[in-house]
Image 1 (cartoon, rainbow, N blue to C red):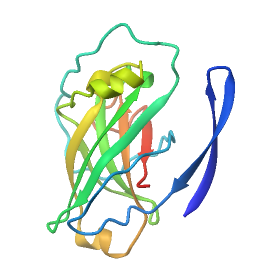
Image 2 (image 1 turned 60 degrees about the vertical axis):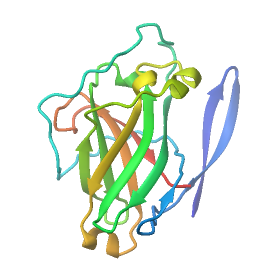
Image 3 (image 1 turned 120 degrees about the horizontal axis):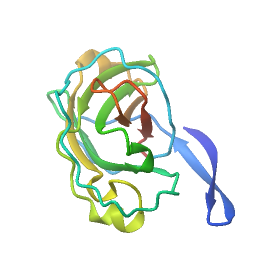
Length: 185
């Protein structure tokens, strides 16, 4: 377990948050709840399992706090099935998604430093709870539920696996990304 300190501004005060990075370490058939820390990255994916022609349109309230520079997200549940499907649900909301209409979920192997799977979020999930807490672009429809296929070899080595939520302006999910690396706690 790695401990990281992250400074962020809360009103006029600077606050230190302790973040713990853990391996995904999911037991087959189990379900868990997790939260996340914020990291923005520009790494490019090398493989993909699903590319859609056009993303589903989001209904977005035009009155939101445009000054909020936060990148907020959390995993609600993670489950690895007997068939090697990683079922994830959660949310990701940020004003940086304004000109990035394509939302992707990516499973990334931190140990081997490679992408394992990705899927585009086609149907955003309504999240009024997120909208009540975070007054940012698209917060009311920031939810996601997805299945990502993993090969047995990808999960057999006990590598540190991470789910990444990405907004991008690229249909393939690579260009101009805003990432949130979700970690199991």
